[in-house]
Image 1 (cartoon, rainbow, N blue to C red):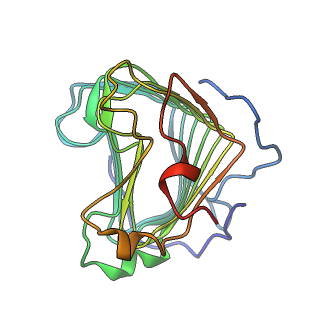
Image 2: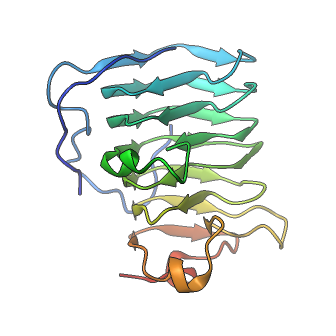
Image 3: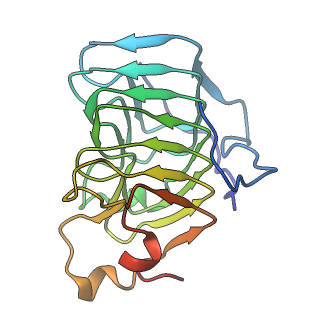
Length: 213
């Protein structure tokens, strides 16, 4: 399930697949000419490695990232029609931030696909951390995490398909999904969907944790 792409807007700065793969998935960024970041390695840079601000039709592909000051990838301030694919991410705390503020409702239009990425060792959280919009997380490989894998707030729609989640050794950190600053009376109505995921080494599955729809 991949959303249609909205029109172009302003500017921006700046592998491993899993079991039960979902096939025939075009990237989100399909209308207009996509802005492409890809094909190199980033480490120990200032702020975010890939910082997307108020932009659309962005494709981040084949990057290797680790050890940045802020996030590895941040998309904020009305950005949409973004695809993050075939990236290798390791050794970082706040990995991917999609929507920076619980008060910025314009991010309701945000549409992002994460596909064929490897979330490797030494990652803590936010793979991704989503607010407001529509997020398709498909055919990614998660090799451990320290806090949680996927997080969200402000009723995002998150569809997880064909991902492999390998839980960390720590028995207190098996949480695949994390609802940030929301009581059950709120998050139970969020549209978070799991289909065809593989859970290994004891992580908490979506169907156990969430309103499975």
